[in-house]
Amino acid sequence: MITLHMRSWVHICFCATLAASSLVADPVDVVYTYADKHEETKTIDVTPTNGVYFVRVRRTELPAGVEWVKLLPAFAQAHTGEPGYFVSPCGRIGSFKLTNGTFKAIGPSAFYGSVYMPIFGMKTPRKTFVGIAVTLRNEFDFEVLARKGLYTVAPKFKVSGFVPPDDIVVRYHTLEGDNANYAGMAKTYRAYLFERELCRPIKTRMQQRPELAYAAKSIELRIRQGWKPVPSPVPEQTPATEPPMHVAITFDRVRDILTSLKQVGVHDVEVCLVGWNIKGHDGRWPQIFPVEETLGGEQKLRSLIKDAQSMGYQIVGHANSTDGYTIADCWSWDLPIKDAAGKPFSNASWGGGKMYHLCPQRVYERFYPHEIQKIADLGFRGLHYSDVMTILQPFRCQDPMHPCTSKESAIWYSRMMQETQQRLGGFASEGPYDFANGHLDYILYVNFGALTAKPNPMVDRLTPLYQLVYNGIVLNNPFTEAVNAAAKEKLVQLKAIEFGGRPIYYFYSKFKSDNKSWMGNSDLTCATDEELATSIAIIKKGYDSFKTLSDLQCEFMEAHDELAPQVFRTTFGNKTEIVVNYSATPYSYRNASVAPLSYSVFRQP
Image (cartoon, rainbow, N blue to C red; front, side, top):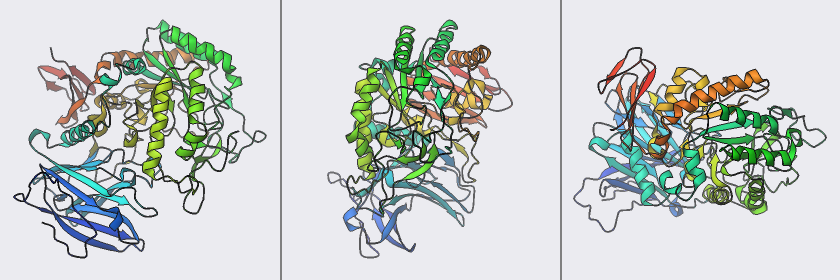
């Protein structure tokens, strides 16, 4: 039954092959927010089919002037003090403890947003569900409100400024029994992806891709070789005004690092050279070549690549096809994305000066396949790293010469990822945004500042929601803070293990002139042989720990729960359990004792 309180702009779609008339319907409020901030609400009754509420808002029938569309099902509510919780797209979980409060996970309007996946969920005494935003994923925000003791959980879709390429479609899957928890929410979404062949497990992909098989058993080692001042003192640089590049690690010194690793028994490493390109890290993107001469030039780089591979290491280079600087020899004002007024988009200053975000269509059409092949021709092979691309939701480009919706931008990025995998063996990038996960092999970090950020009072803790979906599908380091984890406090080390992380170590992760480091203050350096020896010992410690767990990179994460206050269990598809004890007292589990601030691994015989 559909009840309309005003003229209908919303249609609810049901599965035509299944009768549902005997099931109980639930009301859904569809809230339209207009440019002048006033709201209108339409209420519809929705009947589930096989436990799924299927809601569609047709794009062709959106009222003029609407900026946001929000969906508020009656079952997505709870009262203060009730048992249960909400789960955000980035895995933050909050119980119903406040009378008033607000939590928002922002997507397209934030640089480092937190709507990593198009899912959200809620567990109440009446119903547990996971919501899946099937369409307009890149215009999707998430909002939890507590008002006078009533909690509401809602997806919001930004529809202003363009004709949406699709109807708004959200599926609400109800969960029962042992599946009625945040792990069940994640597994339901994983099943949804597999049913539609939107991604494939690592175990399947690595049968045809030895580079991925190698990466899955290895640690990641990034070596920053050179950089200009960041933030840049010269916003629009030219070769005459360009600040000098700091040389930290030449190609010869990289060889020293790898030789030292081999000597101490660190065998499985994927090396990523950062700043090997002209003028170093973020030097002149999207210009990449020539290879930076002050590091040794192209011939020494080619020699280093061969030597690294002869040692048994996989070696790739860091590049960037998302950002651009006017100093690039290939620069054109046709490259940046534009807003409706034709203004190029820029939101940061890095080594090359004022950074402009590039239209992926123009990048691909102008130079991407050619440039990625030139990188491959140097001899690199492995999970090539393309900076930034996956840590942002795809933008709209409103340049009339190459307009792109965010959906179309994601398609162009996917083409880049596929080109990279074919030419270099794999693709890695910076963040976990869901549009990329069908082609992404490795993520530099999933959560940005999650272990050190000031918590929202609505939130109780962070769960490994992303890993519950994607462990065994996408290799990942769970936290920015987990870079160089073996050199950091025990909490960071344990969190990386609890979340199933693939370790990453980084020479000169700290490089900014303002001393702000989003990867923490524990760095690897090698200016002297003593510094190098200290750094090698840190990597060795992290490597030895990881090798006892590396097989879990190819397993699905099937469950995660809190066994006792500050004691968590992570369960994998091969029945391996990791119990992490953050408390001050030992915890007894399966006839064993897990010491305070430590973890234990329980394997099936």
